[in-house]
Every structure is written in structure tokens, then in C-alpha cells.
Image 1 (cartoon, rainbow, N blue to C red):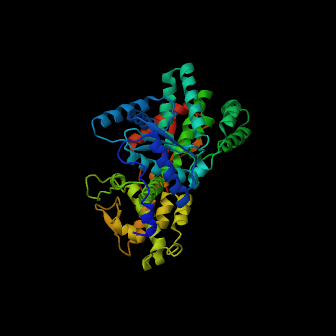
Image 2: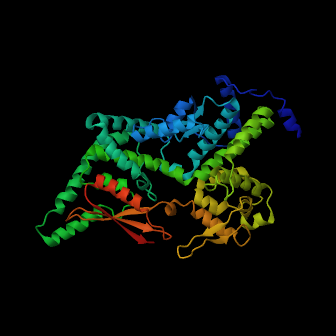
Image 3: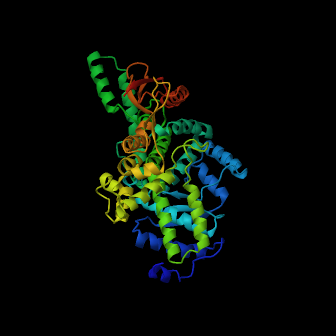
Length: 500
């Protein structure tokens, strides 16, 4: 053991045993923060640690992890389902929930042991927190400083709507809006990020303007006085609709002929929340990998300094190993690649490539092989990539071999699967490309756009689904989506499929 480590281990451990107190939590948090900021140089929002019961954790589960969510019957349904499964022992609860906000709020279960609280604080309050603050997708698409105020506004607004218009009427709009949430995001345009005060000041003006715009579009469309002039007017009004439009909730919010002002505002709230969660869907592997790598580094650094006992470290590593469990492809428990396991493996591999590169690493990663400064390499990756591009850039032959990855082609015209690449020299690129594509949301989710609307006739709305890789829409989902769209549009909606 190095002299520095022997000297460090003379320090008294921060705690010994499973029980925790708020003083112990405070001292441990300070020790974690010192490693995170001084050693790893992480850049984090101010932390707020909340201790909650299992009942409160179930409640947070049910409202998609947000602390100030508005009411909806589906949240209660999820709460009852989760509670029944939890009480029967059929499912466990997450050790933590963390909110992408400033301050960053981390919820820890009061049932956790002190070792688990240490793991959770290192994982959530510093790993996830750093990723939220620095990844370019979160910086572009979310407003960490304003999200809690916005949720408070949304909850208050929905509650007022329930009082004025009835719970069932509000739920009718929310049901349709929730069903269309995956199609309620801008994938390529950066949305405006006004403050809550600006939002409230503009809300009334926007509502009046939208009503005038909608009335103008539809009232003018029925003017048959001059055919040529009417055609030109129709073309101009279609240009005003900015078609094609991929954000269905945005289009309905602005141009539906039947929605009332409060209903448009409800769609806007659901759309903004969908957009807030969009970066998380694109960075699941990186976000969890970052948090897992950070907590692993911090607890080991604390153990080397003598701040954690051997028993506490073993308990933490036991939970850490469980989270990283990756069943084989033919194991009944297999449900895909575990993002915690792969994210952690790739980030440890980046450190290895920087510190102890092989000739193969020099060939595949000439820019970082032997760079030594692995901390900055990782921080650059956490800041500038999403899952798809991270895999494309950093998935190494070494990790492909470690996970025994292979690629399969499933062509409709063939009665069999074809293995197109295995973990050998010829298959690395095929495996990496195929795996990266599996994390590209544009190929995983149906791509539906509003392409036309009949302004002069029956106001029919025309949508187009782009079929990729020969995969059609599932018929029951297609029917359900059209029903929700017609409820919000007020007239018939047609959907056609094209091949990309």
C-alpha cells in the first residue's frame, strides 16, 4: 500500500453501522463533495437532499418522478399498481429519485442504510447533477432554474380548470394530450425558454392572438367570392400553418378549430413537460453510466482515505454489482442491454484507453489513446454526446468482446435471422453501427407529421407516417392515435404511410 494511502487510512471512518443521523449525512455529504469537486472537478448545481418514506417514493414514481405534478387519474392508477407489487415483494423501489432542477433535488429513502445513503448521494447529487448541468441536450432543451416554478404553475392552472370546467372535462383533454406526448416534442428546433413571469405575462396576449389567428384561418376559408383570390388566400393560410409540422400537440394547440383557450393552455403544459423529458430519453445510457462511474470513483476514493469502513464499501459494492447485472441473450431475464452496465463499462474503458492503451486502442482511438487526462476526456464526452453518438464514437472492440455482442438482420423476405457481425475484427463496425442505430430515437419512434389540412371543405386533417426499415404502425396504436387526434381537432383525421 502506498505511503499516502497508509497515512490517509488513519482517518476515522465517517460512520460505522447501518443507522444514520442528519449529522452523519451532513458530514458524509461534505466528504463526497470534496472528492467530486476537488478530485473529479465536477461542475454541479447546488444540491438539496430530501429524505422521504417508501410511501412518498411510490407517490413520486406515479407522477413520473416530479414532485409538483398536477393531478390525473393515471397517476393514481400507477400508484396503486406499484404499491401492490411493492407490498407483495414483486418489485423493489429505486434507492433514489433525482430532479433536473436548480437546486438539484435528490430524494433518498429513509429506509436506506447509511452506506446506501452514501451511494445515493454520490450517484444522484453529483453524478446525475453534473450530467444535467453540462450535457448539451439538457442545456439546450431544459430550464433547470425554472422547472419547479413551471410545475407549480401547471398544477395550479389544471386545478383551476377542474374547478371551472369540471374534472371529467379536464381529464378528457389530458387523456388525449398524454397519449400524444411522444409526438409533442420538437426534435430539431430549439424552443424558446421564457421565464415563468414572462410566460404568465404573455399567456393572455397569446391566447387572444391565437383565437384571432384560428378564427381568421377558418372564417376566411369560407369566402367564395372570387375563386382565384380565394385560392391565393388559401395558399397563404397554409403557409401560415408552417406545414409539415412534426409536433402534433403544437399544431393542435395553435390551429385546432374547436379548442377553447384553456384547452390550448393544457396542451401547451403537456407539450412543455414532454419537451423537458426529451433529453433524458436520448441520454439514458450516458446519464446512468456517468452517475455510476462517479459514485464508484467517489466511494473508492473515500475508502482509500479511511472515511468508509470495509463493511460499508462491501455493502455499496454489493448494490453496485446488482445494478450492473447483465443477463446473457438467452437468459429468460434478458430484456436488452442494461444501460447502467454498458455505460459504466464504456466509461471505465475510456479511462483504460487513456492510461493503458493497447495497439488496438491506438488504431481505433488515436486522439485519446495514452492521453492520460482521462477526467477531461470523460467530461468532454458527457458534455457533447448523446447515446447514439457516444456509442458510435467510443464503443471499443474491447467492450464489444466483453459483452459478447453480435448483430442480427431480420428481413421480412427471409424465413430466418442472419448473423451479420460478431465480436471479431470484421464485425466490430457492423455491431457498433447496428447498436448505435438502436439508440437513435428517430428510428425507434413512429415519425408522424401534419402535412395538409382542408381549409375550404370539411376541415379534414392529413397526417403522414414515414415507414422506416419496412416497419409499419401497429394497427391498434394507429386507431387509438387517430381517435385522440380527432378529439382535439374536432374533425376527421386521415393518416397515410410513406416509405423513407
